[in-house]
Image: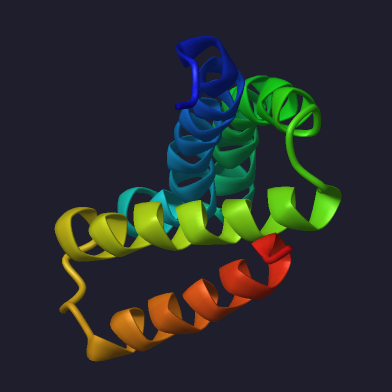
Amino acid sequence: MISLSKLVGPLSFIGLLMLSNVFMTFAWYAHLKNLSSKPWWVAVFASWAIALLEYAFQVPANRIGFEYFSLGQLKITQEVITLAVFVPFAVFYMGEPFKTDYIWAGLCLLGAVYFMFRG
């Protein structure tokens, strides 16, 4: 049985990475909806401000995660979380239709997870 103390680090890594990805997704894409009528440089500065918050969660997440996982495992976890955050953002915030391609991309990522975490 895995003790709770052995789960705190990996769960902290995942939680902080999820928060980081929420900010990252908004920094990268929300300006397309919210600032489309503004000059591009306004979107750049707004995105940079949001990205600063993203880094405030991402850097500690990766430092914590690197105590438990390899660099490749950190990266593939990031990609899985990115897709898990992006799909609801695209559908619910940006109003994009849900596409089965998201499912296929997720299945491909599961294959990548397998290879990064095996043995």
